[in-house]
Length: 218
Image 1 (tube, rainbow, N blue to C red):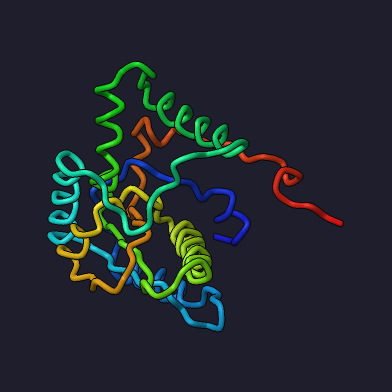
Image 2: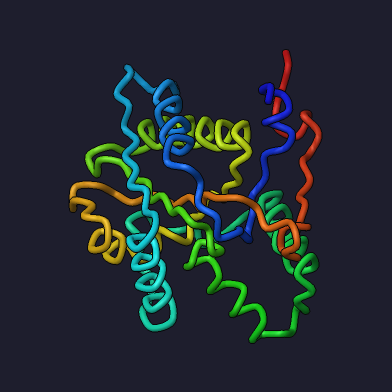
């Protein structure tokens, strides 16, 4: 698959088939992502990829935490979304819930949909991604470059993915399940696997603003 196709076809997939991705394919994706750019070539991204029994244990523990414990992310989520960001956020949520047929006033269905985050939408592989706690914004930018590289490489291999901030909400769970050291700040997770094309959630599509909303040419 060429780069243009991978960019245009990449999207967040929220329901997966149980079939695992072959380990050589996963390894190839993450090996090639090592070529992502970083400030002074520090390569600050750190990732733990759970499969099989480890993945099942992580998802079960994450689900229990989501149902019983208050979130305690290493990096707090934004509280307020000023415009135009609030409009984008609401449109994204509306598109997803409409695709799933979940009504705005159906609290039980919305809660069930939210809890699906913590099993990584049944993806057979879960990556937990972090960065050294001694770094701040510049290293986070580097990890963002790496993440996009991973997502595009995955798409080029026919592997679907969803980057998930929700998987950072209970860092103690990930540290316990995966042996992540305390000096790593957990930023997000990635669900990885093969898309379930019959799942309603995967009919969701989001839009993009015209370039003039984000880029200025002088």
